[in-house]
Image 1 (cartoon, rainbow, N blue to C red):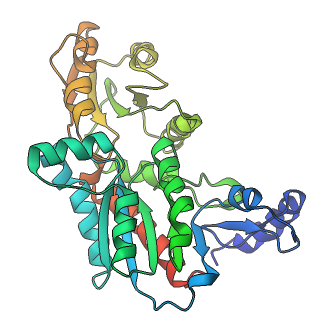
Image 2 (cartoon, rainbow, N blue to C red; image 1 turned 180 degrees about the vertical axis):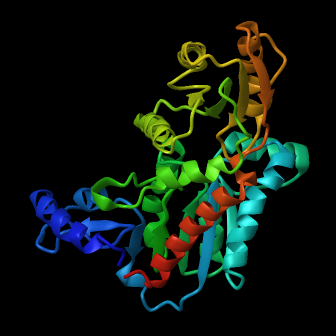
Length: 333
C-alpha cells in the first residue's frame, strides 16, 4: 500500500458511507458490504476503475486465460505498425505464455483494412465470441484509449454484455483515468511527463501545439485537466487543442500572439498519426492547421508521429494491461 493510502482509505470511507461505496484498491471500487439489496443497475453504476466480474455458474471451468487489446484502429499501415502493433508486442512480451488478441472498435476501419490489405481485424465482440469458442474461460480486456470517452464507453459496454459468458472477466482503464483526487494516483501528470520526452527544445518565441481529437462526450473536460498538468509541470508555451472539440485552434491563436510566439511545432496527441495528423494538422490545403497558422504569420513545423511511437507512453499502456491482468489473476491487494 503506497504512502498516504491508509489515510486515504479512512477519509474515503467516511465520505463513501454517505453513498454506500467502499474503496477496495487503488484501481477499483465496489459497493459497501452493508448494502444488502443492491440492484443490478446500482452494482453496475458503482463500478469505476478496473472492472471485475466472476460468473458463479462457470467456476468449475478450468482456467484458460487470454488478453484482448482494444483499439480504435487506423487505415494508415505504416503508423499502425509503429504504434498499435508496437504496443501490442510489448503487452505480449509482458505475457509471453498468454494468448493476446487485437480488436478494433471502428467498424469502418475494419472494413477498409480488409478491402485494401486483406486483413480482417475482429471487433471486440467477435474476438470474445472466438475466444469462447476456443475454450478460453477468463479474459482480461485492456484499452488503447487515452481517457474514458465514447470509445471507452463502447468497450465497457462490451464488458458488460459479455462478462457472464466467461468464468471471469476484467476491464482495465485507459492510460489517463485517475486525476490525483483524494490522494489517488495522477495519470494525467504521468502522461504529460511521458509526452514531454518527445518535445523539441524551445526558445522564448517557440510554442508546441498538441493536437487532440476532441469528443462530444463530457470527457472532453479531460483536455482542461491535461492543460492544467502541462502548466503545473512548468512547460511554457505548450498548448493542447482539438480538431473536433474544445478548445479549437481558434481558441489558441490569440494566446500564441499574446505570448509573443513566432514559431510553432504541431504535434498530434493521438495514438496514431493518421488522417487528422497528416491532413487536418500538417496538410498543405488552405484549411489545414499549418496553413492557418502560416497565414497568421507563424513559422510552422510538424512532428508527425503517433503517441504509440513514444516509449514512455507505450509503457503506460503496458502497465494498464498488466493491471487488468493482475485483477484477472486475483493478485491485486
